[in-house]
Length: 235
Image (cartoon, rainbow, N blue to C red; front, side, top):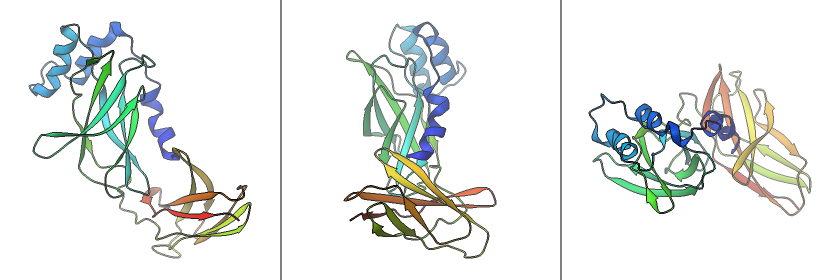
């Protein structure tokens, strides 16, 4: 969080299925009584001795930049498969948007935080053989929320180890809680949780380094989307 991804991916990434269970896997993805030919393709591929496609494809968490984590379950973990993510458009056509190697997720820039109506399909490739496209997985990116997110961030370096991070509260004094997250490579790490305040200090940083932050608001147990991202460089 990419902090939010770790918990969200846990179930999908820890699920293992052997080749012997591939037929069951395809059936779970594409029920035998499902008339949709796109779903039936997975069953037919396995029945013909082909490559089982991914299943349980869905949009996951959204980052402050509008990047969505697309998630799926893999037929066999660690077998070296490549996965190609396609976005399915309203007219039924598909557009390739991302690729990854032997992972159950990939990042896709959807254009805005909390993007709605996303439909994804995933194709698996192993040793030059392609699976059929997975059944489509559609939904709202999890950044969409009835709780308004914090406004723009201001990041002020104070010394080589400390920064002051502030944000605009949508409704000051309403009892919201705010989580401050630090971007660390492909993750977001929670560095502070504060009550109904508009700022906090983040410590333990390094000199001459650029750090980027995002803030999430929690109101009555409901999480907002992300604030716009804010960055600063320590002296």
